[in-house]
Image (cartoon, rainbow, N blue to C red; front, top):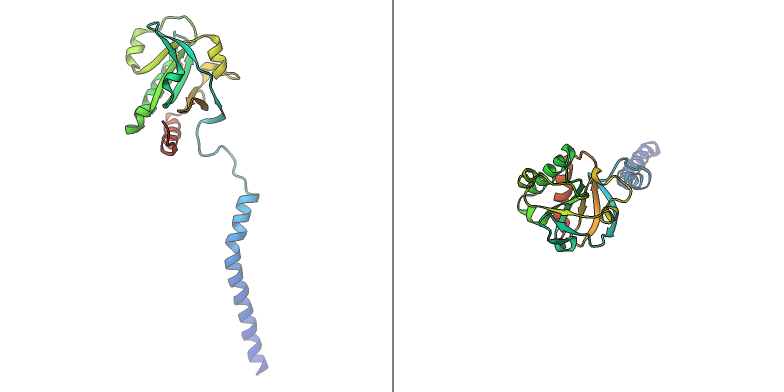
Length: 194
């Protein structure tokens, strides 16, 4: 009789250990995932997050000579590029991408403004202005360029400024517009301002 009870006790212990293991496994895996396994690569954003900092008010003049300050656009998301008035092929690609990224936001597109800061005194092509109408085209001095693009060539990126006037995101040279669309769509969805 004692032989018959012993296997039942052993089976019961195995069942108890198995039951404990099933409940403990999720905790062990979550511990490993949180403290041990570190995913590589960037986060879920495409653009490079910058240390958020308030930009000083960028002041310049529109091509019509009227004064412009970036604070006029407070309350809006701003995609910003810095380029020569000559606007080479890469500059024109950025103009096109910024326009398409804005259009791709659908009903939310009115929350976004596009700004081209012209960094020299070269003439801007009238056909280009017509093609990308709706872009704020503003001549600025070297000081304004330094306030935005301190450590990188200014023409190598498209910047994103939040509705409070903070420089927060830089898209890389030759960006993938789909990545830009995704980042901005997420920001617009999460943001209660602008």
